[in-house]
Amino acid sequence: MSARIKWQDIIDRARDIVDGYDGGVTVRQVMYRLVAEGLLPNTAPTYRRLSSRLAQARRDGLFPDLVDTIREVHVPPAWPDAAAFMADMPEWFRLDRTRGQEWALYVAAEKDTLRQLLTGWLAEYGIPVLVVRGFGSQSYADVVRDRARSDPRPAALIYLGDFDASGSDIERDWVERTDCWERVERVLLTDGQVREYQLPPAEGKRDDPRWPGFARRYGFDLDRPVQWEVEALEPAELKRLVMEAVDGYIDREILAEVMAEEEQQRTQLATLLGRQ
Image (cartoon, rainbow, N blue to C red; front, side, top):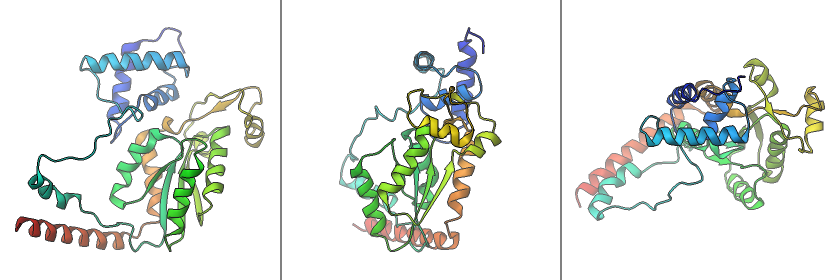
């Protein structure tokens, strides 16, 4: 990689990357993709420069909006008056679209950067999305465990995480502490996928105590820690892999029946409110 970065070319490519997602994208996701394509080095100073350049491009009106999952403005829903609220009520109504399915399915992501994509893809199915955020709190694990155990159906977990020394252990830790799953399937990212898609490695953490065991397990050089990010995958392929895994748990005839009932009740609600 050349030491001199042509930032206009980087911004143009970043714009194409953002336009390729059907959902919000973070600066971190854009960075992962550029690193995976060999266009930027995976360093903290480069990330800061990319963030600054993209921010300026957005201020100039030359770049689409990005998602900042930390600095969101959390505003309670509000309406100008009761009439406006009643007019909106039918659109807010939803049934539990997982009703009648054999499995109580959950999809978990190691990092918050995937949350908005997953919630958008899975909204149609009513599937809960979990964000583990590394070695998550026991309180969060307890909430998930209690929710899953209160459902009479067997619980299944589809998991998405980075392929690195700590990422593998984060999944193990989460599954053990929630202790409620009949089935666990790691959809992303695996050693086989790294090789199949020829994803370039980023430098791993030399002080990660899990690295030696991880390196021995997969035959990596102990002196050269490496890691791979889920976001390095093309968005269309990432979505395909997730939805293919989800599809194995969904009875579409049952889903269609629930959605038809939902629409019928929504129409009834709109009619009732129109008579007030």
